[in-house]
Image (tube, rainbow, N blue to C red; front, side, top):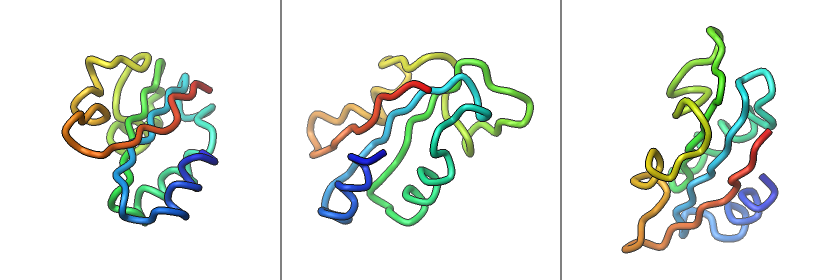
Length: 94
């Protein structure tokens, strides 16, 4: 999250960033509100969040984007853009 904040602070909208994160579920999703705020305030920032075991309270498309562990096959169209300048930050697991 620190790297994401630094990129946004230093480069603003000049750089497209995809924040990749995995957590067991929303109960243990570290800094979920911070990430949502950064994504909402910065059109050049997007997220690819995976929940291994989403709960009934977790909302797909809001709290998380994918079920299971981070899987390149699931996120390659979101996070791997060889023809564009994209920075993937994170790849953390809570």
